[in-house]
Image 1 (cartoon, rainbow, N blue to C red):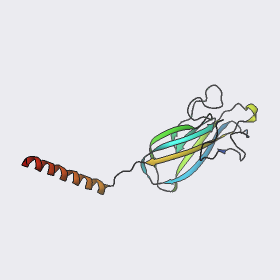
Image 2 (image 1 turned 90 degrees about the vertical axis):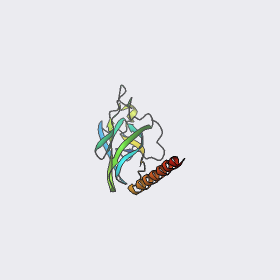
Image 3 (image 1 turned 60 degrees about the vertical axis):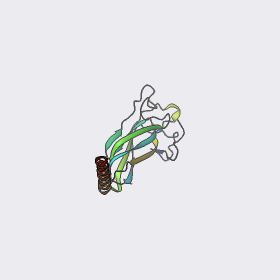
Image 4 (image 1 turned 135 degrees about the vertical axis):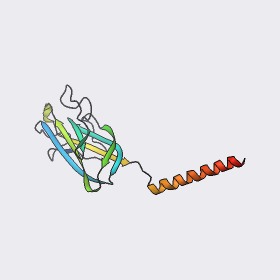
Length: 162
């Protein structure tokens, strides 16, 4: 296991979950959190995630990061989100809802495990950053357009006089 991600908290199936110390049944475990945002489209950012054994991420019920491939060792995924270290996953083109707690972020952790040394926790550690690019308001666009037309007409008149 890699060290915990900075500014994050491990969440797991049991209060003693660590990245070690529990031995849950094999299967799928779901963890959710709600957050508030200014609604709109065009959000992008990153998720830095570590999960045992792998995980998928859903935003408001839509998969935005799929499960990784567990591969040959059935412990940490060979690709995608794994427990070997923090996996920085970029996302873009997301739509968020307005209102307190209107957005639901869901992590589904696949727990396959080998139960080696009784250290086979189910859980994840993550941090996330999402932002939207500023979109000019219509009044600003109209003002910019008027300025460009005025500048172009002055340039045209100056060329006509010369």
